[in-house]
Amino acid sequence: MTITEGNVKGEPRHQRPDQRTPGQLAFLWLFTFRWHLLALFLSDLGRSVISRKYDAFTTDNGYSDEPVGDNPVTRAIDAVVRGRDTHIALRQRLDLVTEELVATTLSRRGSGPVRLVSGPVGLGRDLRGVWNRLERLGSRPVDWLEVTGIDLDASGTVLAEASRLARNAGIPLETYQQDMLDAEGLGRVIGGKVDVFNTIGLSTWLDQTGLEETLGAIRSTLAADGVLVVDHWRHHLGSKYVDALEVPARYISDEEFESTLTSCGYVIEDKRVTTNSVVVVYRARPD
Image 1 (cartoon, rainbow, N blue to C red):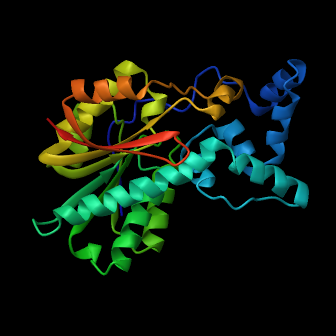
Image 2: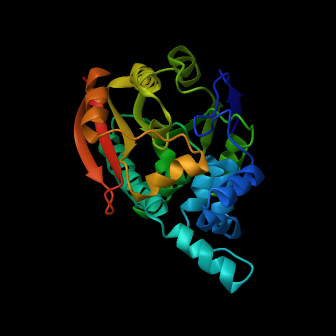
């Protein structure tokens, strides 16, 4: 499992250059009477959101609903944070994406090796879930499924951890450090055509131009009958905290997101929504 460096000039999309430090945020909340937000410092997941925003490590932390803490108070506060609709949606999205990728890869089995690319891969929890479920079904994915992870990994720590977790799970994951918005670089590191491209956790951090560039870059890598699995976050109750937390999320309507997919050369085949109606997972093909 190697980490190949491609174009890594991009900046992390979940961060803003003018973000305050955790200490500066605490003072801001104190003097603007948003004292309830200070409780986030007592939550394991809350501290991660404050300091790292929703990077790969915070997102992976949020996939767990098991509260963490050194005492009953901190565990109780952490349980509240993990029970917010944003984090419930994370876990429900993971279930939907795993189901979609298992069904889609299985449907393509038999026509040669199936290439599944995940970008940004983060820590690869979705890929591990897909692989494990395929193994439980007795389909021996090692015989027919090729898995690749792509990530900007500006910190230089994400792909190493994704590779370690995949290796421990017995998954032959190939990884590339690459900016997803760079179509030429993306095509170069992938090489050949992709059967299934899974991109979750990115679109909400992109402006309209960035979203179009990313969808266009992915489309250029897909086989003629390839499949894109992509998520879209709706405005929800937790959205009211993005400014206070300085999380640069962008929320658009389903209609706007679907119009962008169509204008970027995709045909939407399926649309599934998390139980709490926060995240939409799409399956689309090149037009």
